[in-house]
Structure formats: structure tokens, C-alpha cells
Length: 164
Image (cartoon, rainbow, N blue to C red; front, side, top):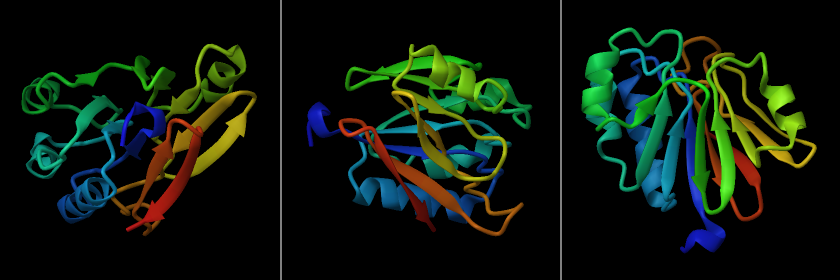
């Protein structure tokens, strides 16, 4: 699957739920996603015991519950950044946030093809102008009892929500 039809995975708010993270990694590997974006709130560095099994690229940002940043950075191979972080994949300009306050403004700016965010634990997949907005909901399932991830087709700028 080349860059023309690139699939990426989006997760957020994993909050130390290792079984859910392992299941998400299995799904991403089975679907042959080429990159995974984590929109913050890993919580503890040991989540990389599960995330290290991804067979693709990885980019994450810190959320408001990520305290042990030095070890998170080390275990991620320096692939976690402060927000906002801009990433270009398959010629699509993506901005990754944790909090939601400026998501619509970023979409309205016309500067980004996709805005990824987390924090609310509520899935939000929608178009606004030319931008695709993706909040995959909570992977942890702690708050609302549903563990969800998103798989995005960057060519079509479309996303599907997958419940674990």
C-alpha cells in the first residue's frame, strides 16, 4: 500500500490500559496502517511495552496527564512532542493537539488537511471546510466504557471509528 492510499491509525487517551493498547496495535498491524498518531494522555511510560509492537511509524504528543515526560521520550525513541505538532504524511498537512479549544479555528484557517485531537474522550469525526477533524475517542474506555480508535485514509481524507 503506497503513499497514494495511505492508511494511518489515530489513538488518544490510552491512560495505561495495556490490554486495550495491545488490541489496537493488533488491529493497526492487521490493517497495515503506515503510521500511528497518538493525541496525548499515554499517562505512564510503560504503555510502550504495548506500543513498541507497532509495525509502522509513530508520532505522539503530550497530553495533560503525561507527567513522566523524560522516560516517555526515551521509550518512544524521541517521537513524542509538545502540542501543537505539525506532521506531513502522504502530502497531507496534519496538526495534532490534545485539547479541543482551537480545533474548529484550525480547520477554518485552511492551513491543514487534518486536525487530530483527544482529551474529551468522545469520538468526533467530521469535515469542516476542507479539513478532516478526528478525535478517536478514548482508547482506555475508563470514562465512558467504550474503547475506540480511528483509521484514516489520507488519500480520501476519510476516517472510520473502530470499537475494540
